[in-house]
Length: 547
Image 1 (cartoon, rainbow, N blue to C red):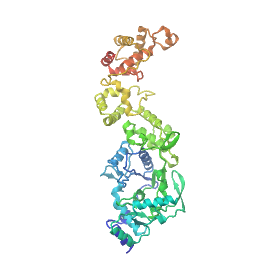
Image 2: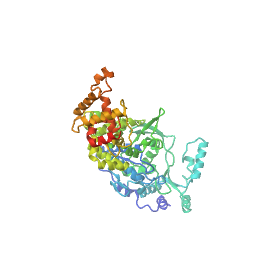
Image 3: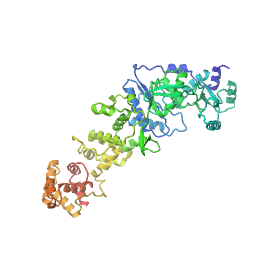
Image 4: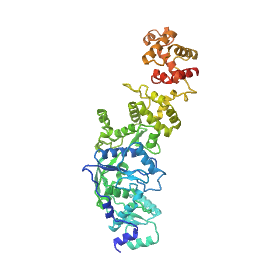
């Protein structure tokens, strides 16, 4: 039996040979230095913050080189796939406005000429290349059971040898064609393993775009390339996909660095051009004085849905990702305040080799700064979108009270130093709730210096009777509060009060605080004159009568 006949026996239903796929996916017509990159998440859990980070990096690399950025779904581990996992990946990219040129746009639709971009739909392609490798004696069927593998592992541990399927432990490597055929006919389950030509004693040096020069032993392990369900392992799928999709740069987490000898070996065995590799350090977190990777189990910020749920502004998150990507982005941003962040060109040499610390305080500051630059109308529209998904009752309220909400959000916004009261859309309600009649009930008042309720009522009664005027601007309003102070025995001028505090019942700040707390319940609010104008006389009097 020839090796071709042998391959036909093992994989009889492969429709096309490798030449078909090589011609189907020709070289891309791109500029010489164009970068073709992909992000390839697995739908086996929630979308990790690192996936969005890598997506932002790849989007920038492709865009600034006139290249291509692909989203590829690595769903070959179907036992671990979660319901709606693929849809959540696509939704995450859509929400954070990270745009890929090619990839799935739904489970049944995609864009690009190099698909399918969901690996489980590329089964025929992988099997065609496995069949070719059988013909070339590069892979072999392995019938070793899980129990036998466990026995091998224990023996290796006992002998203090490397764990793996290699050398004399690769017990199916030398099966004859006849032995294989008999086992297949007996319906024994099998996988296809690499027939590694490597030797562990040989050292290989690789140039990584982030890590620099790295040295590893040559791979000699006969890894599984195609599983018994006909789907590939990550190791094989990524090599075939990155070859046919003409990926020029493979950017991925540095947990894959130890797999580099195997992957380079596969590229070399198949005579594929070898892409450049950039192993990006994970985003880290400090705990008890030590650094660790952000954990899916421990850290809410690992889940990108949490950023959406909390209402982080998308632009602020993307800006933060840029600061994580390159150490010189902040300096560039400061020097180019009018430029779009995507005009900054990310480079591998400015990436943090050991991993940047996740800095929530920095992200919140970026969010506050960004929100302070928006118009009240823009904040309102974004707030409404967030509330419709996460606080429907509040969404209904601000829809009914659109004008009031926009006026409230506009307080102290168009100034040289706009207020920065909130960083997240989820924080806005807690900052403005008192502006709505339906929410102002069963309140707790934050009275400060003046706490006697009769004195408080007297101040408010005189203010509303003699000094309230809805048409007053801020200066006129404050002048009248000073007049109110003089009438009731409070210092209208802080200097006078500080010189002789015993001559006064209090000062103008104390009196204005009484008015502020009576109508908002809080002693810390934006401009009180603007609040009073928005509330209107009828609502102010209603609140005073609640005391």
